[in-house]
Length: 338
Image 1 (tube, rainbow, N blue to C red):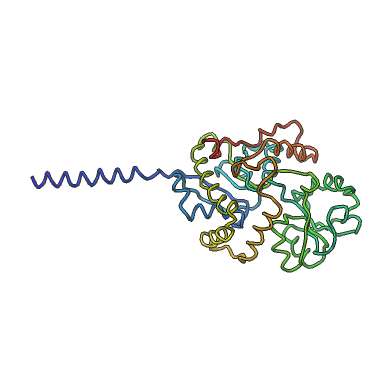
Image 2 (cartoon, helix red, strand yellow; image 1 turned 30 degrees about the vertical axis):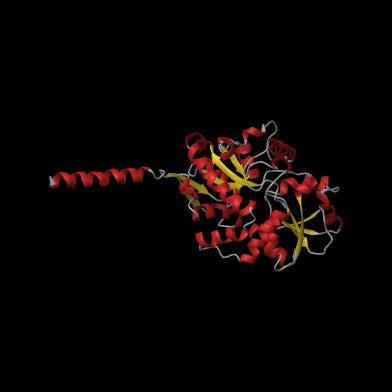
């Protein structure tokens, strides 16, 4: 009788344990390649990770730092990683020119981030001003922004052939500008203004002001992952957009900064600098386009992609004849499942 009671007791514990285990979502793995080492535009991933929101969605995500958007696009397309964060423009070029099997699945920075930093109070507000004042523009050979200079300068009322460019190694661009060997620098002002501005106070103007609208940075996925892991990706996007809405929608920039610091100990950028970067992104309206106002975070508008394909085709960075839907899908976003 004692043995029977013992068996029932043990059996009950086993059953209870089984019930407890089954109530916890099974953890599916996703591997993500970022485009750089941790920076502010990765804060939503680390907040979602810190708060256990990926686990709530039954997803375990491994994040890996990257070495640029082109490299990340190639690695995701090679299927060693399921998803990545990269410039959607770089992804579009890779798919068009190299046939890479990768698509955009969510947009985070929805406007063209490219622009030019100039010394504060210089009075230079357009490419025409730079040409008229014989300004040396620091840039890099093969930089992703350089193919668009011809269109940008033409739309601004001047000719790029009249401009003076100082081509340097990408690693030397910042020091060349800060050291005043160049008078202006082609870059992403929303990110670098806070960094360079501490040593050389600057202002900036944007390529998008001339009508050159292209997708900014977002999340990409291999076609294999889209096909074989749709539920895992939906869970990942749901948790990520929850964090994105908290940081960007709620303007809780300090929470974003704290999440990076806590989850990635190697991150050493000063708090004030990171908060300034968040505010520059906000000031430039990079999170939302006219076509995505009122839409869920991550949503990509057909009008925006249509404009982007035209701009990139005109600049000859992609071949003619592409349809926008070749490059993106909204089907995996949380809103698509509601």
